[in-house]
Image (cartoon, rainbow, N blue to C red):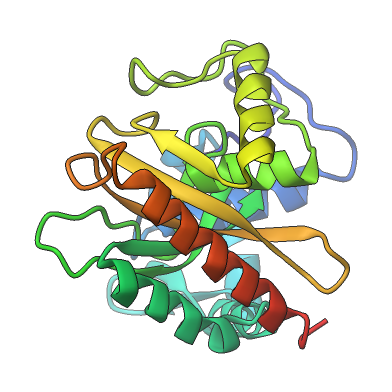
Length: 262
């Protein structure tokens, strides 16, 4: 979970930039619901390092707008109707309905899990995910977030937008294969641009590999990445060229479809 600005005299003693504290804290509160269905303000306060009174104030304000709902019997809060409507509209306007058939075709053609993700700061947020048809598979439901330097979608987004990460070095290590320095990441992004697709070689989870390609909008900007993910036993070096070709073709078709929305 992302850190929130510390309260005066609280943990860290940091003071946020003027005008950002309220927004940052409200977003942090909403993000706690990514991995918790229903919570009390006290539970949220403990998770974020806020005072209980501050958490109550933010939760009540979000509830008043419909971003959060409340169970009157348990006094627990959950994502509300406004959040649901905004999420649905965001997906539709990003072309989820239009792109879904192509993602399904990619999954059915390879038998492997397919994800569509977008950048969210120094993370990749999963918008859509179609599970593999195999019993042994890698799943990441919509809403999951992955550190951008550890996943194939993240490297595709970075490489083809020629963007930077704000993280301090060394980057967080998850496996012996994780890239932890700016130099290592830059070299990998150069290889990604040269071949047209990115690879995650057990950098986030041991035993899981992935290949991804950029999806562009009508102006040619990379706005998303599509990936195939699965266990390394099925993503061996002998099969990676086949999977990469499938992802590249799917990304080309997704880009063509998205131009109709631009």
